[in-house]
Length: 163
Image 1 (cartoon, helix red, strand yellow):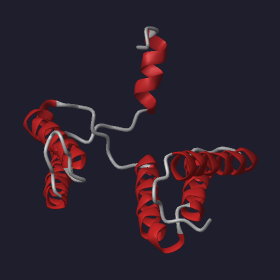
Image 2 (cartoon, one colour):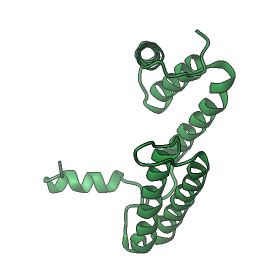
Image 3 (cartoon, rainbow, N blue to C red):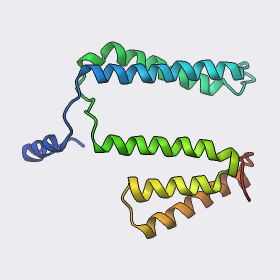
């Protein structure tokens, strides 16, 4: 819902980080384009299969192509946009979220999904989301238990796990 009160709009504009300009906008689009192209190449290597018998790389390939096309569009149109923000403390929180995802991916095959997933959800809730200790602990446990129930027990997805 857009802000209609001029005073609220002015306050919202004052609290927003300053615009970064067109160069970071285009650089971000180029990074996303590189991710899309790398994903397409990697998923093509998994095998696309056929439409009637899709291979393991079909959906990652399709998503990677969409990312690449949208990123390329942003490279072309990004110079005129004003939505890229300068680096700030919020940028560090985003980087911390990315680092925790990388740690999850690294720990998953070593110790299963339960402990890394529990830690990921807890860190995101407690430090990135500023939730209370109690709600962070409870929601983390419930979330991992729900994923265990859904993916391991009901769908029988072969995840690396401790239990």
